[in-house]
Amino acid sequence: MTEAGRGRVPEATCPPTAASTLVKSIAGHGVDRLFCVAGESYLAVLNELFDMRDIDVVTCRHEGSAAFMALADAKLTGRAGVCLVSRGPGITNAAIGIHAARQDATPLVVIAGTVDTADFGREVFQELDCTAMFGDLVKACLVVHDPGRTGEFAARAFRAAESGTPGPVILAVPENVTRSPDPDGVPAGRWAEYSPGPSPQAVTAVSDLLSRSRRPLLIAGGRLASGTGRRALAAAAQSQVIPVVTSNKRQDLLDNRAPNYAGHVHNSTSAEQLAAFAGCDLVLAVGARLDETTAGRLSFLDAPGAGRPLVHVYPDAARIGLAHRPAVGLPCDPVAFLHAIAALPARHPRDREAWAGELHRLETATAVWCPRPCPDGIVFGAVVSALDDLTGGDVTVVLDSGTFTSWVYRHLRLTGTGRMLGLSSSPMGFGVPGGVAAAQRIRNRPVVTVVGDGGFLMNGSELITAVTARLPLVVIVADNRSYGTIRAHQQRRYPGRTIATDLINPDFVRLAEAYGALGIAVRTEADVRSALRRAFTHDGPAVIHVPTSLECGRP
Image (cartoon, rainbow, N blue to C red):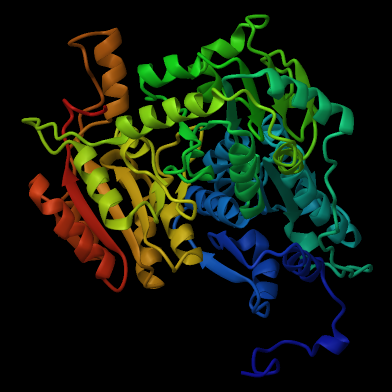
């Protein structure tokens, strides 16, 4: 259909609007996909996206899902994920994704249409002051008042979201501004940026510490998630014979079968492994914020002066020393730091090989699945063990929140190309939308979402988004008929007094079929492998329902 056929004025006679500048600025930052629930407050932006063939617009069923999808996409692309939401109800629905982005240090740009500038502060229909509501949660809340500064504000939003400690940014664009002519009309693009590497003095200081260390331990964090970062991590660990522990939800940073892989720090890391990690005499935290879950499990980080110096490498100087006292703090590019470490002469004590081997053997032994029959359902470790065997760890797994995640961390051993997508704040409802976003990016290996019955019924409606696009997404529903994690906390703190955690669920197989997906019922442990094989060969999304044990909920 021609432009005239769409009823639009030919572009030559139509000055660019702020909406046009905004959409071109989004594209100029390399964004090729965004997620939204359509809203009347940004119709002008949608109108411009109609002609922007380089940006895939994914229609979602809830703004919380749209934000979750944008977070999953950001993890896979390494740039800020983008979602579009409308005023009032739209932006408040997206709040869960904004909170998750902050706690997970994942870059997110939420573009929110708002009421006209003339109506600010008058409590008009669906008005919401984004700055007042989200000011303490986002890295920045930018409100475009002047159409001529749209490109500038777009560039500031992406820069803020991606720099330092990444996180969420809200770009609020009033409806009247989006429709107004932009006298500048120049869209913003990403500029070349070169992060500083470590100084020679810093490298020398770390080299001296390493040369004296018999039992170093490297904690790898999310700022190493790029392909370059993963390769640098593997090279540095191999060159200097340093065992690597990945921080919470970052299990995929190093091939889990590599001889230097020592394990993953999460809520259910085995006590034996944690005790072994405490035997280190030097800690290198590289690209890791040392968030509460990671650092909380590695309690020895809170013991300065115990003969266990800490080297903390992170691009945001404000994170270094925030909760733990380093011997050396390096606010620099962690990838450049690893390149420098890999290039150092191998001057380490000979018994370091034995230390790395000890930790890797312990991790390997911990990952072995030993069948554990339980009377109230399938132990989910059997499902994860079968998934590991069938894929060899070359799989993208998207995790929701629940007790079942402990089995995934322990018994799925990811390859160097396998990916794990999860959020450190552990919000329920991420699994299905996160899986949809991952399946849109990844077509050369299986994409599997693992979600509990509670989490599926929060945002599982995005299954229809997968059906619409015929995405090869496999959703495994671990159904223990309970909010299992909370129930476990209740039982521990108030034995015999569980309340508000029992669930009555629908027939998940029939529900999947109603959406147009393949539904597969698993009744016994013997059904698991055939169910996975059938799902992997299906042309489109498949849902596998697994009645899991509540009694044997975690390792």
